[in-house]
Amino acid sequence: MLELRFDESWPNATSPLQLRFVGELIPEPPIRFGGIGIELGLGIGKGLRLDNQLVIHSLSRYIALDTALIWGGKSADHQDYGLVWHTKGLAQQITAWPWLTPQLHKQQFSVHWATPNQHENHTQLDWLTPLQRMNVNVAKWSQSQPKEQLASVLWRQVSGTQICQGIAYSYKGQRGFEYSLPWGPHQPQWICSTRYIPQTGKITMRFGEPWTNSQSPITLRFTIEPKVCRFDDGGGLIDAHPSLPSLDLKIPIEPQIRRYYLMQPTITCVRVFDNLPIVISSCSISQSRGQWAKSVSIEFSSRIDAQRAHNELLLITINGYDFYVIAEQPSASKVFGSETHSSTGRSRAAELASPYLLPISYTNAVARSFGGIISDILQQGAGSAGWTVELKGIADFTVPAGAFSVGNKSPIDAIHEAATQLGCMILADDAARKLTIIPRWPTAPWQMATAVPDLTLHDAVITNYSETVARNPLCNVVWLRGEQQGISAKVKRTGSAGNIPAADISAQLIVDNQAARIAGTNALADTGDKLNINLTLPVMADLPPAVPGMLIGIREGTEVFKGTCDSWSIRASVSERGDINIEQSITVIRSIA
Image 1 (cartoon, one colour):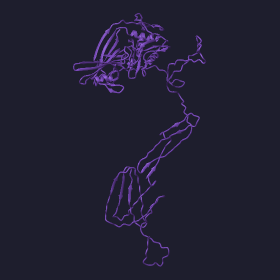
Image 2: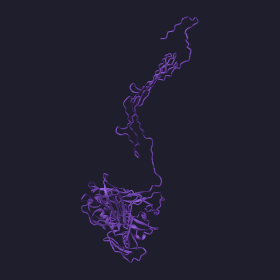
Image 3: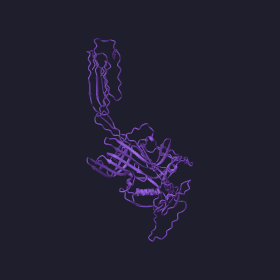
Image 4: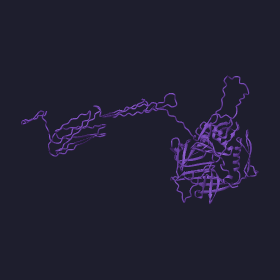
């Protein structure tokens, strides 16, 4: 309560009395709607200078506090008191008490409370179903109305004085229809189908004798048609991609000529199914045109390595080139103070041979193409899944029903017999598990002058060279005959008299002019004088291992003479000091007559 005392009377005073205070008016602090404001004034005299600062560092999790208090009075000075409290991962309090000045002080607090127990409460929940975080349902081309629902679940709950939650639910119904109609030329694509393509005309069915036990209706069963693929080059009514002649962009592999070659040979061996390292001291791999698999000889560094590699698929990497081999026949040799463990085997193509697959018997019951017969033989093997076969450089032809048969042979041996009848050979890609049937002479000797070699060698990379001559008569004609349903054909070199015949050829697959042409060309290529050249080469990044059947060019001065790679071998060895020696040897056959 405020009491006013007057020491004398004022005769002219009238009621009510007005009291005026001089000085600057203190503005009223704004009070927001819904808040509480208290104004309090306190006059403080001038005292001694005092400075006190207190800093408290404490850790508090999930605490958020913001406080502001406003104190003041109309007829008093100001007292300012500031308190800042705001943390996210750390609680911090700063208190300032400025004294010793007649200046006004101010203390301000601001309190925002959502609930008495929580500083801040936000809850957000997007929930469509209790089992799925996101569910998108789209219905198209239906008589019912299409619906689209999109929901996501976000849930967060933390301990302490701060809890964040959210609840939200949205549903979007039908807003319209959307149709997409492609219009324009279609893209190029392969079209494959096993559906029967009827021939032009009607089909006449004749039954030779009545079937007494037949019941109506009669069920006719047809064999599955082979899968036929054709390429549609796209475009509209006018072909946008006309057929163009193939461009010969073949670029031969030729190592660079350098003053010196820095070699860093490497050799590693791992077991394929678990990548277990196998330590080997030497390895030799070889193959010729008459082999469908590579021959392998491995010498191990210990008995344990030999046991781990026995009858297992191994991956041998020599200077970055991979070779898949199977160590099939282990052997051991012991002398005083020394013990050697080695093994011989074949490449991965041996998976298609005995003893991994049982022998089969095959006869083409229906007319099949040569490529179809090879595929049928490959599919008969119980463990041949994953292997594929293709023809390269061979024109496919049709084999009449029952014309080809093979018995009691493994699938790879049966395929090799079929390829041999046409003068062809098998190349196996062990990494891709793929068999390729190619002619034994991919390039005939009379065509080598204008052909582009696959690999060109020069003196800088040839470490050893030797040659021998084999004399044979040069023939220009050969007679070929089929056996049961075959044909008789005469194959003659163009431009020759056809008066020097080679040995006659009789095979089951000589049933078509294309088959006779392939077999006759390879038979004539084997005749004539041959120069057998043996070369020893390194294995580098720009000089890969050769492949049998590859056309090899050997540069001699300014001229390049060419021949066919007949055989190839590579040898890698590790000395007791750890030195690695790697080299490859090839035999090239060059026709000189």
